[in-house]
Length: 80
Image (cartoon, rainbow, N blue to C red; front, side, top):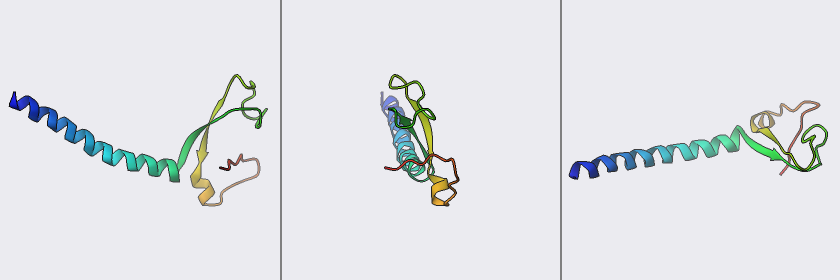
């Protein structure tokens, strides 16, 4: 029985170690490099969301190119 408790503790400890490493890395990536967003509504039709209000498109928002001022004509820019 004592071995089972030590065995479970080992997995809990490993989970929390991974959790405390993965969460900051993920948050930094989503804030600095790129994130995924959903486009809903008619504001970007017909380029995005051509099906109307029933469908929505998923886009990748590239934060990296904005930081380097690498925006070109024809790019879609999202403002918050």
